[in-house]
Image 1 (tube, helix red, strand yellow):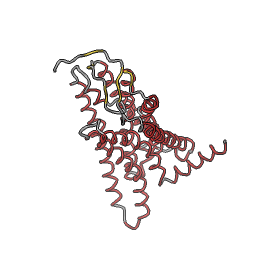
Image 2 (cartoon, helix red, strand yellow):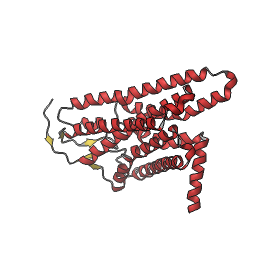
Image 3 (cartoon, rainbow, N blue to C red):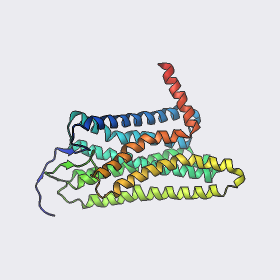
Image 4 (tube, rainbow, N blue to C red):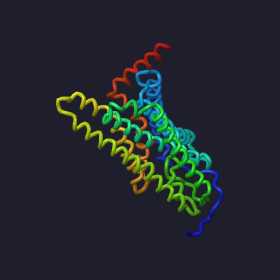
Length: 312
């Protein structure tokens, strides 16, 4: 490796979207609005599920966990970006950058695993309906979520600890709106081989394996639905409609995530817009997707909103 000046880093600079001060109020208003919608929408989903006993089922248990993960996922990046825009500062401390990376990886991983678990839940519900309550018992549901947390926390901790051993050059500028792992690694002067090996391994773990599980589940679901006699069209439609929301969220999550990591330059405008879709827009749209055609969620949300308005 070519020798370069090394020094102890105390902070990084996040360039964000625009250097023009004219655009800053527009960006601040836009991202603040999206963040508030994301938090409010997902909180309402959680409140609706926890307050309605009819929704205490595996599918809605996983959905409430997904909503919590979405709130947390967005909260790792957007608040700091808003503070930087408001204060006209682009700095983030070294500890703050590592912390942001850690939680970004934790909740991003949780989103991936929860979407996979939800696909398995739909697979059991449609392909093995008579054994659904036996298979998807509370113990298994809790275990699936705990395992998801364990894997996400473990990987994120290992990757963060590996980042702490790196020394950085005098260039501490990250051309992004958050501390993106791949961008930070390019600033390191020390050997990053272990970091990259772990990153590739986890890309397979958090990307290929869960996505293969989702594809397998929906292949079996589609096969099962197609075998339903045409005379039972109502049941066939109901079976498909229970999967439509989840399929939409999976497509949005993996589509935007793929756009980020296939981008030739993540720091370019195209790459950052893909990152916004992945980290902000997808969590914001999830509550709307799940409540749009779900009568149970709509009814529970009406009850929750009714209680809030009654208290006021």
